[in-house]
Length: 116
Image 1 (cartoon, rainbow, N blue to C red):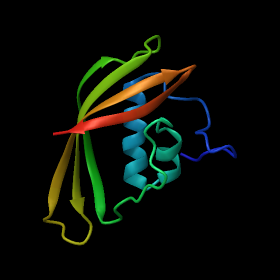
Image 2 (cartoon, one colour; image 1 turned 90 degrees about the horizontal axis):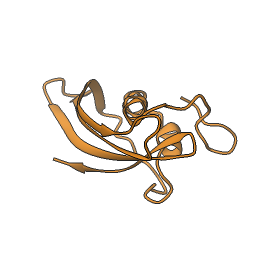
Image 3 (tube, helix red, strand yellow; image 1 turned 45 degrees about the vertical axis):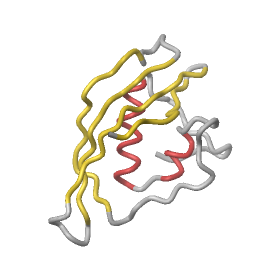
């Protein structure tokens, strides 16, 4: 998941909010901060993204989606991502988030999410 010279993720782009969510999970799993940055909406994108190298992402469970289809302007994806520590294999956790996405042109972007 590399970015182009302009910092944008190269096409083809995710056709739905859920597809973008899944690709972003994969980017977290492999530590691809550039892809995460390129798929984060400019209105909420952090200047820097510091990924935790100790986290090993193990599984993604998508719980629900609201809108976010190829013809929608916005969408919501609720998911649980499971992880464990690389240094202490018994240290496991999960991230439960309801994420918001917007579509601009033919591209979906992550906006923000509520962690619960």
